[in-house]
View 1 (cartoon, rainbow, N blue to C red):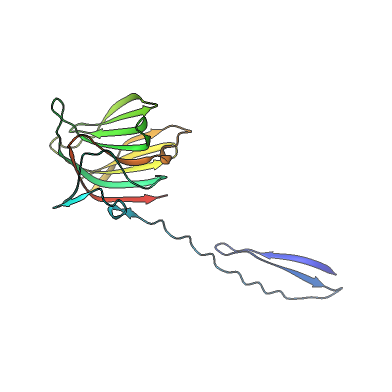
View 2 (spheres, rainbow, N blue to C red):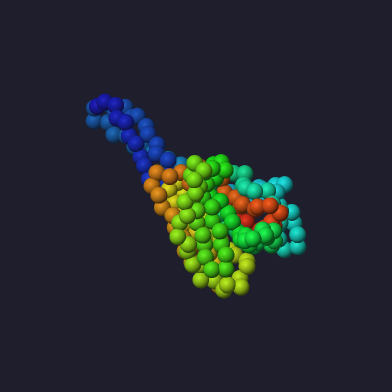
Amino acid sequence: EGSYFITATAPGHNPQSVTVQLSAGQRKTVELRLRKQEAPPAPKVLTLADWPGVWEKREQWFVRKGGGFVLFPVTPAAGTFLFTATMLKSTAIFRERHLEWVVGFKDPKNYLVFEIDDKNLSRKEVRNGRGRDWPKVPHGLNPDQKVYTISVEVAPGQVTHRIRKGDGWAVLDKIEEQGRDFDRGSFGFRIEGNDEVGLRNFSFLPK
C-alpha cells in the first residue's frame, strides 16, 4: 500500500518515469514506452564555399595573391583541416619563400606558423611578439615535389600534422602542451608580398 515511483531505462532510449498508487494487496501492470534517442546531427563539413571572396579560381587551383595572414573565418578551430596546396609564386629577392600556414592565430603577435620546403617542416611559435623556433622535422618526400596534401588536427592542447605519402598518410608532427588553447585561434595561410599560393580540396571538419 502506498505510492511508488518507477523509472525505466534502456540503452539508446530516453528514460521514462511514472508514479503508481497501490492499495493493500493490489497488483498493477505498468506499461512504459521508451522513446529512442535521436542521434545528434553530424558536424557539417566546411569547404572553400565557406571562405568567400578570398580565393580566385585559376584552372586547377584556387589562388590567393598576397594579403599577409589570410584566415579562415570560422572559430573556434577545433577539428581537422585538410588541403592540397602549393607555392605558385615567390617574389622574395634574397630568400625563396615556401608554403606557410598558421594555427591558433589570435593576433599578429600570437600564433603558430608552419613552413614546408623540399626537405623539412619548419615550426615556430610567436608569443607576445617573440618568436621561438622548434626543431625542423624531415618529411621524407621527393625533393622535387612542390604540391603537398596535408591534414592538420587542432585540439585545445594539441596540433597534429599528417602528410599524404603515396596512397597513405604519415604523422609528420605532433605538438602537445597541456593548458594551451590552440583551438581558440584561427587557421589560415601566411602569404607575403605578391607571393601566390594555390589551394584545392580544402575542408574543415569541426569537432
